[in-house]
Amino acid sequence: MVKLAVNGGEPVAKDLSRMIPRWPLLDEDDVKVVVEAIKGGHWCRLYPGSYAERFEAEFAKYHDAKYGIAVANGTVSLELALKTLGVGLNLGDEVIVPAYTFIATASAVTEVGAIPVFADVDPKTGNIDPKDVEGRITERTRAIITVHFGGYPADMDALTSIAKKHGLYLIEDAAHAHGSEWRGRKVGAIGDMGSFSFQESKSLTAGEGGIVLTNSDELAERARLIHNIGRVIGQPGYIHYILSSNYRLSEIQAALLLSRLGKLPSEVKVKNENGKVLADMIKRTGVVEPTGNDDRVTVRGYYYFVMLYKPEELNNIPKEVFIEALRAEGVPVGVSYGPPLYKQPAFKRENLVKSIPKYILDRMPNYERLNLPGAEEFARRELVLPHYLLLAPREAFELVVAAIEKIKEHVDELQQSVNRLKVSDATIDTTYHR
Ligand SMILES: Cc1ncc(COP(=O)(O)O)c(C=O)c1O
Image (cartoon, rainbow, N blue to C red; front, side, top):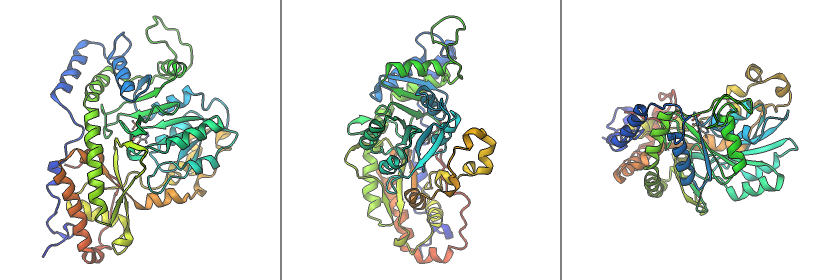
């Protein structure tokens, strides 16, 4: 008799881990470029024609942006974007951010001395809900940060028009969205400033790294100055025009990024095509629903393949138990971040007092009271697969579907095991499992 793997049966997708490429990807020519960079003797970007300079130009070009400023990670890139726009210079400055995202989207706001205001997200995509954004604008709002959740572009038409109407800056946190397109335009260069991460799990990576993009000459110049402790790159001597920090990216990472960037467009193409194939296959199971059907999204770069769990189609088996059962069958599934951000311990008053100056804290909302329906529903239903699964051959997708179908067929057996199956951590392992 066939048994669920979670109960000791044979995992139906046991060959999946062999089919999914090991992340991060690395070719011999990447190694060659990195070795060249090391042997070149310039490990910091402060020389003409640096790898960082070349990477900035190439990455900006790929994303249809005029300028790029490479930095140490995708958290400080958000901080750099906010500082460049002057957010946080006035006491009480507010920035509207999505309630469901990685914490850096909100912590970057507090790091520059401003106040994050959570807007609800669309429960179908996890992207910020433009209507909810508009209702949260006050005379202190300076900017909106949108995340393209999982690589699925947010509604840039609505957000651009709201930002314009209210005189606000629009920042794109595109940490998930390398190569994604909104109506034929790459995201990250549609708003005033865009921010990307090159952390190990991301579609383009050097272990750590980040970049800000902009089309504005003035903002690019200011960002470059801020990222280099107020010093003009290329200008001799120690003249600092502004008090700031050091956000620079190392040359070794820049060399690796430059090499990997050459392969990104073809990887995005494959993931975009395979994402559609997998979505069609998964939809037919009826148990999970792939997200996103907006025609204005012309390319999905993918960080996560996001799905919504439908427990009502599976005897109301809790999501965590479904995850455990699927993992046992060999599918690297999980949740992205868990609860909405306002439920993080960091947003409890008792912890805010440890990180936020009192004069700012006094102006902050009580985050503990928030309960945003879209974010709550998305958190309840969201399931994700890692993006590099989409680089696997199609047979891999058949195994994912076979695992879901197997669980569906054996739902009674799973029901009997529910109380035994305690899930310690449902979070996806973005750097994989072999
Ligand atoms: C939406 C989002 N913003 C910002 C970041 C921060 O990037 P980093 O990890 O490079 O600091 C991440 C990283 O996971 C992210 O997912």
